[in-house]
Length: 110
Image (cartoon, rainbow, N blue to C red):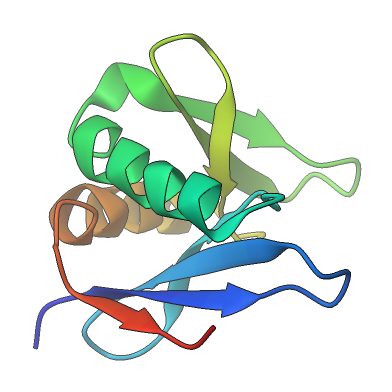
């Protein structure tokens, strides 16, 4: 099963989305957007930028857990990963976003 986006309201009245892999695991969580249209534009940005390795900023959290952020061409953060147990697990997460990010399947829960 291919991946898909879940577009939903955020607790603060804003909007956000998750990119889920075919196994329904969240592989990318978006920033919060003030409008639904802005969140939909964020999904389009993931679809465009996710195949490009240069758009992934590999980081380390304070507790030394590796994670990544996906950025747009202008450097703006589009979404973040979960915290991973190892660098290799993070790299697998990046590969999953590269594979599933271009999907056009969106589940609108707004």
